[in-house]
Length: 264
Image (cartoon, rainbow, N blue to C red):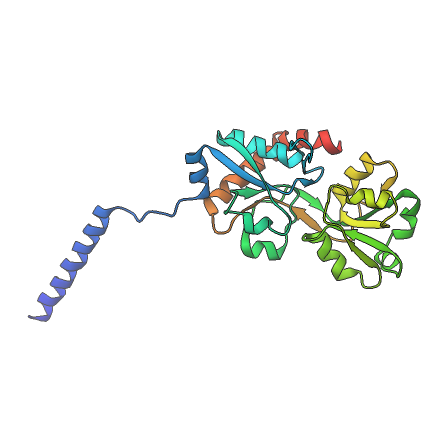
């Protein structure tokens, strides 16, 4: 076969291959969790239920409430599906994502460790760690140096960013690990702990609910942090839809209306 004939033969094979590929149609893209949610008619949202004002599950009735519980309801409504809230813990928050629920909501701080394993939406709250203590002790615990002293009892809830902050910054104070975030502030009120370092928005809420507690400089927290919602890693389609929904909710008054009921 001559060189010219060989070249023509190769061109014909290439054209044939293109025609076959065209007839077969474009390769199918993997289905997004968004598609599965719409097909199922239900969105499953993981939440810890122990972090007011964002999420709370009443242990007596099982009823859910909070800013992010209301936001989850709005998300489901705009998707046109039912809402199912699935209890989780701070330790299993990322592991449960994509396994027992479609996304996670409830005052979740953005961390690089979580970002290795999941996608975040755009942030919707700017926050940071600050102390809360009995009001008579507020002047004693203005700085980390004042807090990190022998005999000071700093209480934390295991598994989240509060524990990480305490472990990293408190070397002399006693860290008291209390597993129930719903009763942790009672420990401070009743004198079994001196303070807690947690998110400023939570300190504001707790101080509002318990006049004996004072939030210490919530407008000037020790750290910078933001909160967002967690989505399955790699699911860009679901992430983009969630970002658009959140952007609308933050600018059409939806989020402000839900937040006002809790923190004014």
